[in-house]
Length: 321
Image (cartoon, rainbow, N blue to C red; front, side, top):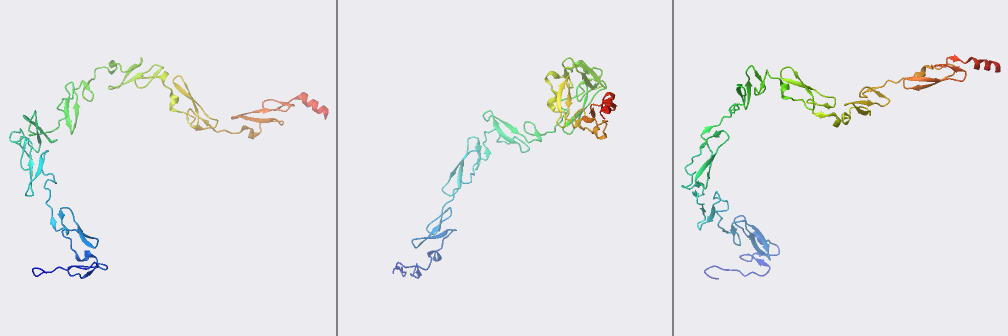
């Protein structure tokens, strides 16, 4: 005992300020307090605290000073330096100033804030001049003017046409002698003068604003641009229902299966059996060929339908009878 206090030296199975806890039945964390959100754990019957960030001590009772530069308070590439009083200082580049280096230095061309309407200013030519980056609705050196898009500003209408702005597009009102989207065509001119037909095709006009091409036999296409020697219409498989395509003379022919007919083999063939009516007489045998038939007669008959009796054969038969 010293200074009216005491300290208990406990046996191995006891603990506590008065040896009141039984180590075999009690948890030392039940009688220990961890501060500042620390978590208690035991090791060899001793209580310890697992401390959160910025705290220390056996019971997390002490706090560590925070790093004031952890939040990167200094801007535009400046350097943050912690100070002894728990704050920070920003070391700015030569063209910056302010606590956070957020301002241009007095020698910088942007320091006077020349750019208007929330435009961004940055130095050019080694910071001897400035450039204002304007928002989309502004223009001018200082972004001082409102920008209004005018599709007629470039004078797109030709030959004296009048441009009329329609939202972000335009329409041309053409003089009487011109036509076209931009009044680029002369109504008195012949469109065939531009020789639009290729491969020897012959141009002809259709109305006032269109042309057509009459193509030679070996070409096709709107402007006769395709050579039929290199064009095989059967590549597009025009024949239907299993028909076989045969190209010739720039066109084709379909060879249809027996049950189909039509130019593209697109129709069902109606097939009847002509032998059902027994056209062969005198015991002749009927054979069907497509929609037709033929009769094979017995030796005592002849004719297309075996309708004729062979008289000599008949007499011979009568003779034997």
